[in-house]
Image 1 (spheres, rainbow, N blue to C red):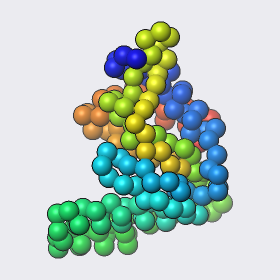
Image 2: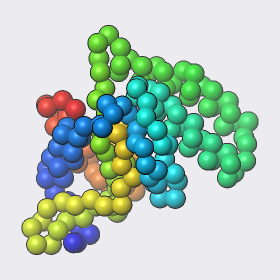
Image 3: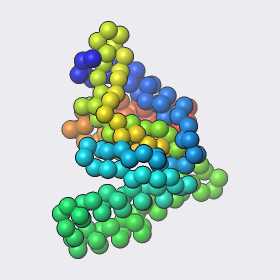
Image 4: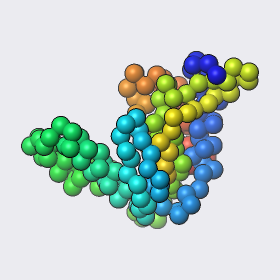
Length: 167
């Protein structure tokens, strides 16, 4: 396997297929096995709603931050706003008025360093996953920073495939 950047169209199609074809074994968001994003343990459990799962996961991540760096008044204040206002206003509308978010299998820690291309057939490959079943757009969350290595073309391909064929 080479460390070169996968073709955006092949990579986007492969990723979109993973998200579209996967089925949560419980129909819920989450996973029953502990996975790690680097050295950070991810939330283990199942939740009926994407908002609840995301909130619980975020609380765990902030709890780890506080355990390592100690409490911060600013973090407490910002956390209240995040959990009481921001998350509900962003995520709740996705699951109301007959709208449904399908839990989709994601890689979970997908960035340029966790992808490559097979040398014999040029097919994209990914590795070092911390997979679980969130909203399919979770995968795109860390792609915006330039240090991730995936350019706008990959994001556009995946976004267009999702819009065209659903999640």
